[in-house]
Amino acid sequence: MKLFVWNDDDTLRDYKHGMVAALGNDLQEALTAVSVVDPNAVRNITAEKPTAVVDLGSEYKAAPVAWVCWGGG
Image (cartoon, rainbow, N blue to C red; front, side):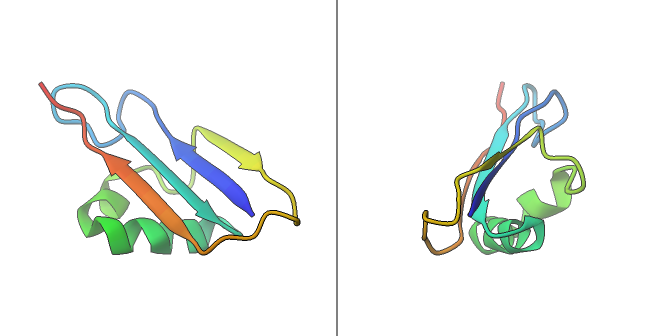
């Protein structure tokens, strides 16, 4: 299981940048979790370049899930 984080100046930008975090076994699974939570978010993040990827190890088991926070003014 991996934690994928998108948190740069262009992530979910309104007036300020936002942030996306998702748990998944791979990038595609994480992006699917993001699209379930907020379909607009998955189209507005740089999917190929997460800011950080943290390998939580094979002993960590969880269903894919995502958190989305849009930037605001």
